[in-house]
Length: 120
Length: 114
Image (cartoon, rainbow over all chains, first blue to last red; front, side):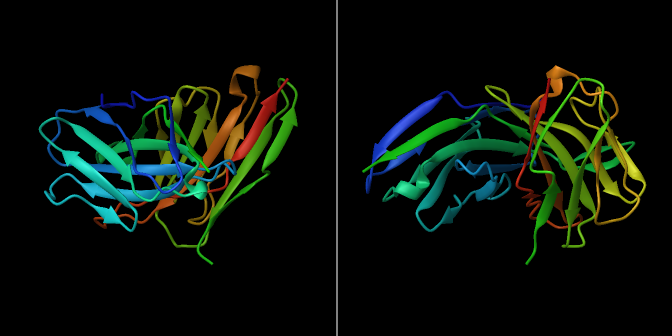
């Protein structure tokens, strides 16, 4: 079974600075997908960024970028120019397409989360 | 607006009283899934459905039932709720047969069982 580890339960950063959240995962698969989700105090789960394992190029979305190290099974999230609205719980998630009796399962395996606080 | 809706958003109930949490999506997604979120555990999958009348268990299905009679709806049923089912529940949906596998989440349902 796949596992996802986020070793930083909490982090803080000053507004406008850069912060990196860590994520490692364990899998024997070669083809899979990795995601970072943001959960603000509203509890809504918001997709921040996505990385396909077959792509060597790191994904970027505006101020958010990842450092994907497939051999090391590492998938860190970098937030540049941090804003107060970035304060949230961040979850790293792994997905491998599973085929079983119920059809295809796009199950996300989540880490336990990192609570990020952006200070003014 | 493309979205996943859940009702109710908050529910306090007593042990043993049957309840249903509804989930509906308007994006014509084939795949739908339920997760529960507990402190320190992240989100864990309860059940999923690949299409109408096709459902299967996730990692923590005990105490839950689901049905998929229509493509847009995927209700979660607790026949006899217990306090250990107090949690935050999320419904999610996704297109199948694409390479993005992006899942759209509902706003969550906070359930308390006393």
